[in-house]
Image 1 (spheres, rainbow, N blue to C red):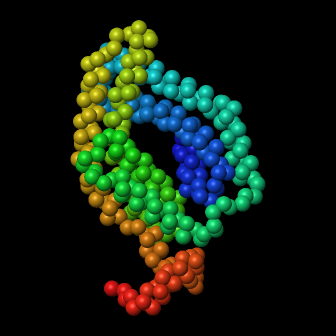
Image 2 (image 1 turned 30 degrees about the vertical axis):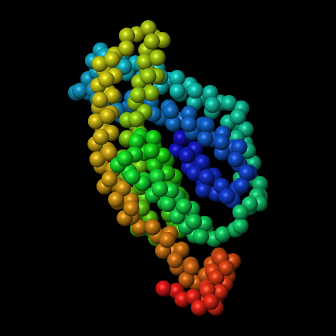
Image 3 (image 1 turned 60 degrees about the vertical axis):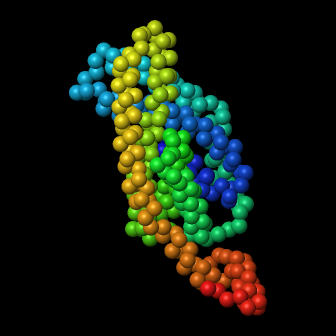
Length: 288
């Protein structure tokens, strides 16, 4: 469900300009559901993937078992919260509104563009945003890397959504570089989440009137910090791979500009640029 909801939100975000305010309320509601699912997923990762790696020999001792028990309680609380959101009237009304939108003919708010033109513009903007978020990469703290991870994720979704519109091999290379970068940033983010997760697990342990397994919690914290350091060392190479990955939408855009004014979409832009060039030439301006 989380993946399907993520794809739906991706589509709404990609075509926000065309949709205007039509589904803005529904998009906000879906974001709340996605947030709840994300919190439950964070506990699934901690319990199902991270804790088994921390426990030596795959056998949990008494302290590790108490830590796992507290984390399980916290996970169940997150799941119950998500279930309440899904069963709410707000979520049902959101799905009904989306179904009504898809069943009825709609008017487009933004000017109509060709699919490749629209995709090239969206991909260019999102790629530039990733580059901006990745400035001074080695100096970024966890919050900065989290913002970069979100930008990388949104670009990857757009690449996957529009991949059929451009050359297959370059798009696959771009997607592979984004997947590698997102995986590294995701593991760093998982390590950053461990402190608030342990705080929540400790509150659950207190409510159960159980002694908090401080040694097991500290071992988990140390393991995550070591893991984050390793991933930060891998980050520079992944970033270089992304910077060097092809951007086939730029080549497509250059091809359109060469023939703009005859075929393609941007007659008004071509007319404006032609007028500027003509005016400069009339003043004796020469391109260098």
